[in-house]
Image 1: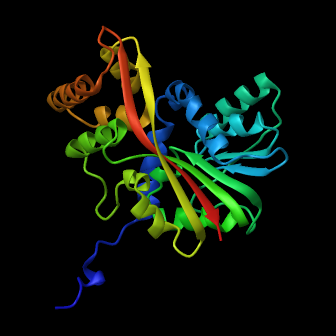
Image 2 (image 1 turned 60 degrees about the vertical axis):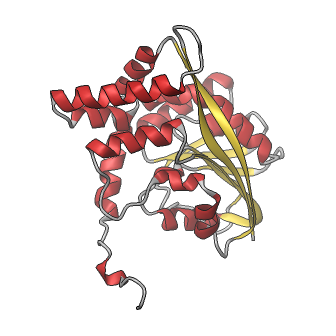
Length: 277
């Protein structure tokens, strides 16, 4: 028996999927959540062993956590995202610190830079959400110089955030054929994505701890400001919203380690350093 006929696989309209994703990330104000993740960018820059004067590209940079971390290390940084409002937030943060960063709108799947333009290319919880994963990985590798490094921070499938998206998918299934973003949080998928472009892939298991006033406070913030959660609730009727809310609160309660009324919730992620071949 031959392998499954690839012609039977669904044809994915990546442009339409991307349009919906861009709308989701433009909803609310991701910067409210993103700013709390700053430590991840700092850790990633240390894992990359950044050197002053390095040319660094931050892809799907959001409001600039890794961007700022690299700029604080005297690197020459270009920060990109396809959501203009997030770039504006990053620009304001860089200005407040007097950091000379270049901010440019760019699609992670079609980066407007020449081959080998950067010493380091990085992304924290950003490029993993691109619909065409193979194309995005190829672009990261293309703009990174041979011998350079690609640094990533990706939520894992079993992480809290991975499970949040899995729960949402029960109510709003992803487009047919689009694979889970959380697969970027597995070494097996990374080896496939960077096959032929990596001389070495080093992964380190880490966790980020969400700290909020309470589980209800976390839900209030994520429902109002975290685009994918905001859009998910907006797409459901009242009963479905109540059901999704209850499931997410159960998930939160099962992972809350505070021991008091606050929220202290660790979420696993994979820190990745790819050495470009």
